[in-house]
Image (cartoon, rainbow, N blue to C red; front, side):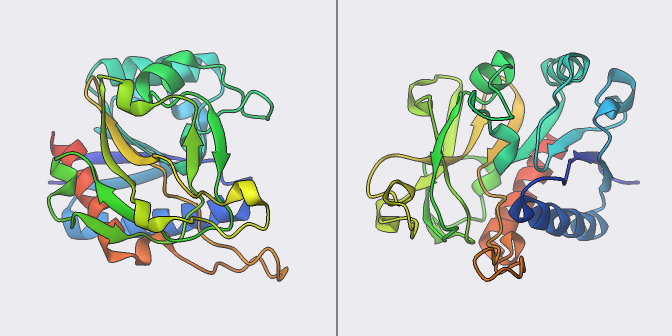
Amino acid sequence: MPKFKVIAFYTGKNDQAHISFLHEANKWFAEQSQQQHFVYDTTSNWNNLNKEFLSKYKVVLFLDTRPEKAEQRKAFEDYMKNGGAWMGFHFAAFALNDSDVKQDWDWYHNEFLGSGEYVSNTWRPTSAILRIENQHPALKNIPKTFTSAPNEWYRWKNDLRKNKNIDILLAIDEKSFPLGTGPKPYEIWHEGYYPVVWTNKSYKMIYFNMGHNDIDYEGGTNKTLSYTFENKTESELTLDALLWLGNH
């Protein structure tokens, strides 16, 4: 008998870096499901985000985007408030009012994730030294600091340290600075506090800012230059987090 069932929602239409991660993640999670004896299903039909469909699954993943329709959003909120579990990556938390992905879902961005609107990011995708900030079962096999896979790192409007419901699990260590290579100066971070993995104690959830592979845009080949799950520590963290959600 499988331990639990996972359903991963994705869109896979925008940004080659996110699409590359999505394909990598689907392959990696499927392999892990065989080894760890859970069921891993995927869907790009966000209309499946409904009560009947979700009732079959212990854990929901958002690999690259979020639901946009009101009925999908309500179904997900109800699922989470009734004991469902969730893991999200990178762009799944993105919202910016001057973009195609507006911050028009307060429960998700301000209460559930706590981060609020996206503010800016580093560029190009680069590795960072990540540091453990709080104890958590997902971190049981993770060293206090480690070097991540290359990623485009996000900065958020809300200070998660001031939210009593949020446990920040990993943040960018100061040894990472300067982080990013530009060419635009504001795409290189020289200081500041940047959470990259966190949970909300009111829900069974974990968010990873990772999920953006490095792509050869400049050379015009659009080839993937880095893979997130080739980083053994990050892979261990993701697996332990999923097993925590599935068995929690």
